[in-house]
Amino acid sequence: MLTMDQYELIRIAHRTYGEGVKALARRTGHSRNTIRKALRGPYPGYQPRATQPYPILGPFLSMIDRWLEQDKDQPRKQRHMAERVFQRLVAKHAYTGCVSTVRKYVREAKLKLGLTACKVFLPLQPDPSREAEADWGQAYAEINGVLERLHYFCMRSKGSGKPFVRLYRCERQQALFDAMMHAFLFFGGIFRILVFDNMKTAVLRILQRKNREEQETFARFRAYHTFEARFCNRAAGNEKGGVEGLVGFVRRNFLMPVPKAPSLEELNARLLAQCIAYGGHTISGRDKPVHVLFEEEKVELLPLPAVPFENNLPPLTKYPDKYSTIIFEKNRYSVPTHLAGYPIRIICFIDTLEFFSQGKRVVVHPRQYGSGKWQLAPDHYLELLRQRPLAFDCARPIKQWRAQWTPEMVQLLERFRQTHEFNRGTKDFIDVLLLYHDHSATAIEAAIAEALTIGIRDSEAVRHLLHRRTPTVPIAPLEQYPRFPEADVTVYAALGGVQ
Image (tube, rainbow, N blue to C red; front, top):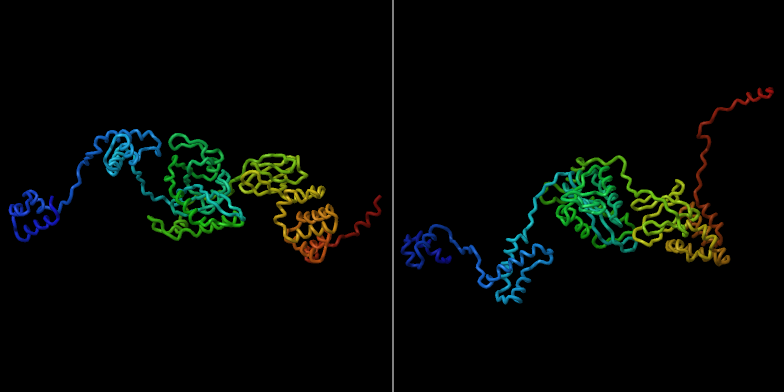
């Protein structure tokens, strides 16, 4: 084999000094054919072998092939790695070669057997406004001082790359529908095709190939909004890779560090602002920034329905129990005590529950998630507590409400109890709390603060202060309204002669 120095010597001696092939062969010790090859073409370098011999590993190759062939029927995470093949050869077959040789052969054998085939993907250029992808993610946030695990819905346009994100306390079907309707409003219309994984809220049963049996309510929602739903193959998240990447991006950027907010609504408002601001960059392979493509695709989207989809569960009827509460999804909700034992109709929305009695709405409660929670309205129990004042301090609705009282309210309760005997003072304070039925909390708290300042010690005086603070409706002068013409009373004189 020629070295680079010999190759250079041969070419310079022949081309520059005219030395012949025969003389160069004698001088270098190479054959005439080798000299002619050096003069005819570029430096050949080292040629790879057509086949790689395995002098030590050779007797074991068929055994290794058999092990790897058997792996085709084994779980993916319990197949032979090269290290394990080496360990078995050493322990049971007295192999004396090195592990690198085993690694090289196992890599070649797996490729030949199709065990490590590299996936190839097609470069795509989606049409604007045609498709979007949807998925759920999970993250933690501190809501009103309580750390909660929340679920966030993501939708991403495949055309423009614009994202939409919204937080929920669950991934139920109502949450999915509510999130999608908010997403349609954000994008300004409806995409013709939406891509999902096989979420239970949409898919009832996975059939052969791409066929799916959809949940009845999801099919009704899809038909109302006139989009086509496409579902990925099992364990094939790459089929909606854009939104899969968005789920991680949102967690690392929009929800890092762990966000804090007084309410879920305020946190969702922050996320919406971040989604609107997103898009100043240009995605690889596109010729315009995200926000420009987003504005262009709006005009191509399907229009929103004139009437929003009714996203509530079928109404149901329940009876309040002995605590004047109704149990719904393992949580309790209060109704006025005078309705105990009467049928109550419940309409369930994603974030509220509405309770009706004889066609009249009696209370609206925020919907609770989880189990064992009590959503009590204190004013439902005030009349009953006035009859049983000894239960006032340990009543669950009062304990929940007391955490929100101002210091002045606590002082007023103590003053009433000191002025009157315990029960009467408690009843008098309940009369003050009953004012919340007809007046705002701000006005009542201001009246209580004034009552403490001037030394008032009964509820009637507090009521008087509150009424004095309540603005009265001005009386409009009658002169500004048109008057009827004066009546002709002379006609009544003629009636006197009628028998």
